[in-house]
Image (tube, rainbow, N blue to C red):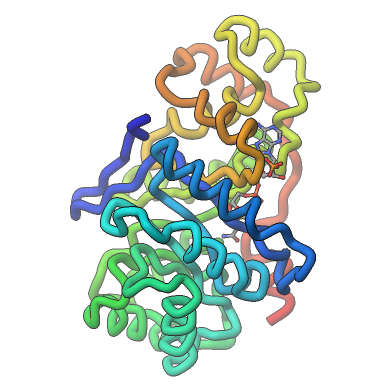
Amino acid sequence: MKIPVKKLKNGFEIPVFGIGAYRMGGDTTHDTSNDDQRDISAIKKAIDMGITHIDTAEMYGGGHSEKIVGKAIKGYDRSSLIIATKVSPMSLHYGDVIAAAKNSLKRLDTDYIDLYLIHYPNFKIPIKETMETMDYLLEKNIIRYIGVSNFNIEQFKKAQSCTRNKIVVNQIPYSLKNRMAQKDGFLNYAQTHDVMVAAWRPIEGGMLSKNKVHIVDNICKKYNKTPSQIAINWLISQDNVVTIPGSRNIKHLEENLGSLGWQLNQEDFRMLNEKFPEKEYFSLADDYWLKQL
Ligand SMILES: NC(=O)c1ccc[n+]([C@@H]2O[C@H](COP(=O)([O-])OP(=O)(O)OC[C@H]3O[C@@H](n4cnc5c(N)ncnc54)[C@H](OP(=O)(O)O)[C@@H]3O)[C@@H](O)[C@H]2O)c1
């Protein structure tokens, strides 16, 4: 299956649907009881089904997620893949970013990272120092593109003003249930400033697959689709939005891919947008991680 891509003016392109490797290998530390083979098989199957964007982080499984991704991509055409990984917020000083990127390369067992993101902002480390290091990594061909994650508009603008290169992606939580990106204006900013939003937790950790909302029920019947397919299609029907659902279960992966190749009509999109019950969220600046720093 050819996954459609979205493009920015500078030529950066990214498929609307990728696979997230959070919890593969453990949560934030290595879980030695993890079934690595199952996770490797899930990623391989995803690639066989046409998925090319694989999202991981040095933080996932204490680095073990990157090792799993590295093993899964062996034998595939590396140039056809978009491997995204993230530097942790505690590693944003010059030497730490360089060391983190090199360690990620080793764990991924690859020569370059396609998209390198700052996982969370860290107020205690000057963003200028971090962005200049990102420029260095890009200019040394260690990374192909620079991204950030969990940045609000002000943090994004500041980061962009500190780099010679374009920040192509902000990876943020966004789903039918979590509309922070609409409320804090980042979605509109991205759509008007040629930036891609990579929506994380698109089915709310599986919660949106369990249909308890009457309006989704009606839409599922109308389109003959499942709640997860509706939730993902709703996201990717929006300009400058792509997503990275997590799945280690092949049946879920196949189901989720059924969100592609069709489109909610404008009326149904609007209805879901307006009527789907949202959950209250703190702003990104109040995020848990920021309080840990
Ligand atoms: N930048 C950040 O700070 C950040 C934070 C969180 C996540 N992320 C990224 O975003 C990715 C996705 O987020 P997420 O994994 O937290 O949430 P998610 O994609 O919304 O949900 C994944 C969970 O939903 C289940 N699931 C998937 N498809 C399903 C289906 N059709 N029916 C029922 N259950 C289904 C999965 O179980 P199975 O494995 O059994 O399919 C898994 O437990 C992560 O893997 C990571 O790459 C980034």
